[in-house]
Length: 332
Image 1 (cartoon, rainbow, N blue to C red):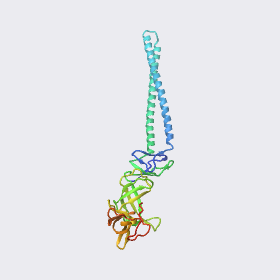
Image 2 (image 1 turned 45 degrees about the vertical axis):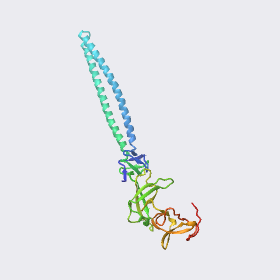
Image 3 (image 1 turned 135 degrees about the vertical axis):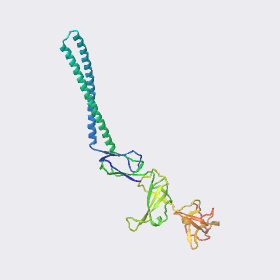
Image 4 (image 1 turned 90 degrees about the vertical axis):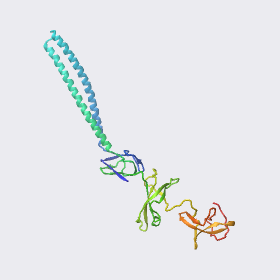
């Protein structure tokens, strides 16, 4: 389930937040693309916002002043009307007071219109800010789902276009091991056989696995004389620690049996009558013991018949043995 993440926008890689082997969750930022003109647009927008906010404060102060002036003009008009009714002032003075009220009302209305225009301008700038933020979010590449980073194809400073491959993601719920086996070895391998996977290194943890499939045809490598078969082993449970590309040691178990009699492979010999081992008899003498072997491993051999519990098998003799030869026992 590998998938290649591609760029949905143009830009320059500003930051890469993940590395090969990292496990990511849906929505987690993977990298950030930076448009060289975005910061300039953002700065111009911020300056214009600040200017409009200052204009709004000045207009609010102007409205407050205009409201006070209107109240004063109305008070003056009220006094002049009373004086005119009493005959103390001429009609011209009364009309002058009325013009003052009208002018104060017009001034207040104009200031309120200016504030409304500034408010609309601020709203447009706020919408523009959302657009800029969306542009910035579009430049941020997010993980579409839970995944593991298999490869990072760009680095900081890389210039990308729409459709540029950025990185490769994999399914963290599955961990596969790919190996090559010589044809003779591969013939012993079948799907569903158990396997053991171990990182190369001291005190490495061993993980159980299962053979997934075996290639039927050998593929030629760089050396035309050497051929190998591809085998895929899947970990039964993801390790959550192995890094893609790590070299590991794999033991494939073609067949196994539990609770059997076994001896070191070097102790088993073959004669004209079949397989046998040397056992320690009475008076520390060597005795040839015919056996029937079962499963054969790299270092051990199963003994189906011929040995009983308590038999002492001679291994790694310093010289060839013969029937009845007295031996010196060196417990290791």
